[in-house]
Image 1 (tube, rainbow, N blue to C red):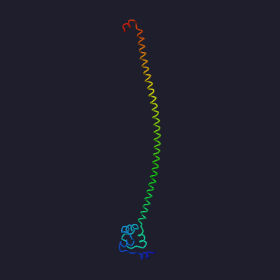
Image 2 (image 1 turned 30 degrees about the horizontal axis):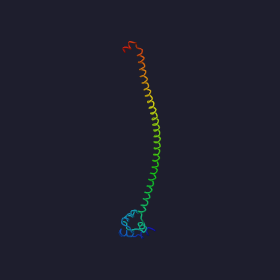
Image 3 (image 1 turned 180 degrees about the vertical axis):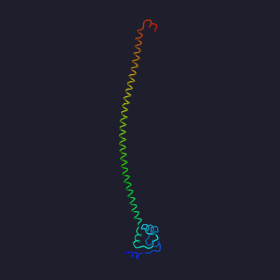
Image 4 (image 1 turned 180 degrees about the horizontal axis):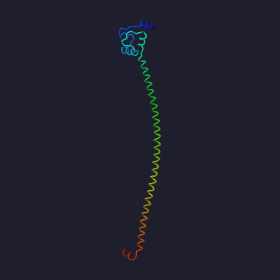
Length: 162
């Protein structure tokens, strides 16, 4: 169609109410659709094509595209979270393995030190036994020396216990 034919095929409405009744929508829906198609809200003459487009629901298409974008964003965020979770789990597993190795090494060190302490305790016990024996032997030796010294004293020294 040429522009002259479009102008001749224009349908004119006296007010918004007539237009709303023709399209079959509420005032808010009418203005929302006119805004979606970049039409002025004060416009009262429309071509048949414009009226057909106003009858359609562009806001549903917009919502669907917004919903698709939101779904895509959510899916991307979920993928990113899954990747992050996998990385965190790997890091956690690695740290757990390292800590287990450290723990087993420290446990072996504790076991070694416990054996050393046990050996030291045995040695200390043996030393106490030997020290007791030495003290007993020293006491016996002292008594024997005193007896020997007693027997070497002369008659008068033994008599007067000097």
